[in-house]
Length: 72
Image (tube, rainbow, N blue to C red; front, side, top):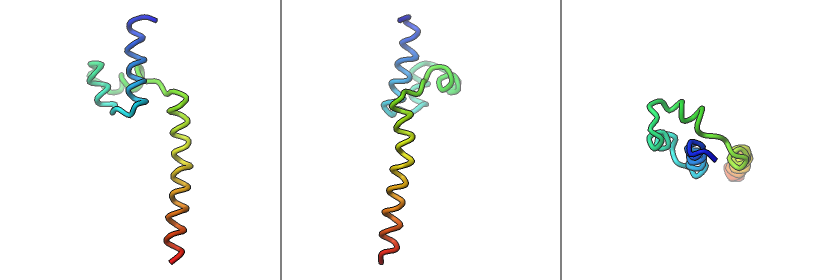
């Protein structure tokens, strides 16, 4: 692995751990956040799965909220 590859890996890792894109951009020293977002961070399989699951979690939450509102 080349040293420069570590920048990509660390950016993706920090993103997967929930750090803000602005903090990652500053850490890498980029002036433009687009450089960080488009070139340095990569979506992992887990991140993709979490995004997909968030929709279903929201659907379950909405159903329970609707149930509690309509059961009065």
